[in-house]
Amino acid sequence: MGIEAIRETMDSCKHCFMCRHACPVFLATKLDSHTPRGYALMLAEIDAGKLEWSPSVVDRFYQCSQCGLCREDCAYHWPEDDLVRNGREEIIAAGAAPPRITETAERLRNSGVPVDNVPAAPGVLNKRVGKKNPDVLYIAGWAARYERPEIVDALAVIFDRLGLEWSALENECCGIELLELGYTGEAREQAQRFAKSIEEINPRSIISSCPHVCRALREQYAVLGIAFPPLPVLHTAEFLAEEVEAGRISLAALNIDAAGYHDPCHLGRKLGIFDEPRKLIRSATGSVPLELFHNRESAECCGAGSVMLVTEPELARKVARRRMENVRQEGIKTLITACGNCKTLLLGAEEAVKGGIAVMDIAELVAAALRDQEKSEKNRE
Image (cartoon, rainbow, N blue to C red; front, top):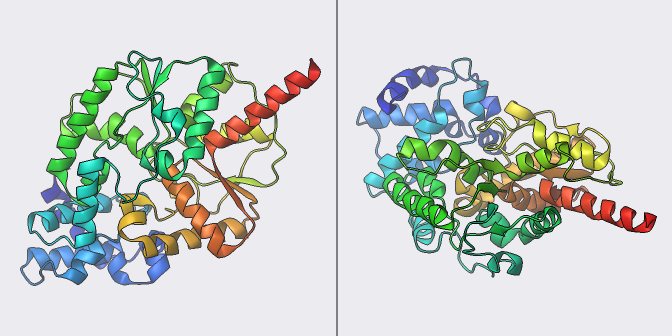
């Protein structure tokens, strides 16, 4: 559906309140301008020349996580998240983006990372950068690479156990953060560079612990007109589930009580990957995970979407605290997710909620179960 058609169909959103309960940002702020109706009303006023891209309006358009839950909840599935992104494109074209957005975009263009003072990447990753013709090209994503290196270390353990030759990229910016911020032209250029760097590595397959990267390579590059080699692209949850099912990985059941799972928006709702993480949790713990009240297609965003953890950190933390309060109410003691961004925000929220809840990535869970299995095998010897 073209953007003009989207804007026409979104006229109905101006008169509808039915999805406001689904918006995690609205639930955190209680502001009607943080709802699909609010965005539709503001865009209608802008189209009619009655409203300009003032700082307050621009702020609202960058305070949407583009999680897509409103689209999922809508009976007509109006693409509100696409409409917000289109609004951001107009903001960029009008030169109305605030400094926090322009500075984030500049960092993404220059270094591939949306934050300053980036720590060193894990040594195990640096040793693999640029290796040609590997079995696997592992793309950690910036959050796992710099903020959550324990995810990278866990995957390295698993790759080594499987005897896989693997490689890594020097710059992991796939361009999607720029696209989400409204810099569509720059996103296309970054995506072209990213695709070329992958082609130069010449891997047999790609595995990423970042749902944004997986969605970019599977779906969004085609929309941007980016030629991409016909390679298998798997999220780590898919890859690990395949290895366990094929018997190439054997897991000991860890002694983890009340494990639950948080569905990342881009992995679950937008890519439809729901079962693989849950199968892994059952294999690694011996029990099916506890489900949050809002789960699978209806899972609430943790606040990490659309680079909000960088551009709107206070709001992102507020959304995450609501999610962790829900986790506490469900009696979950170990919360497992499958996205470095999600883990970063949920860990911070746990510190605020103080619910005594452990937060870990699905790769960490599998690596821990694998180490326990190896220990058991050695004890039997």
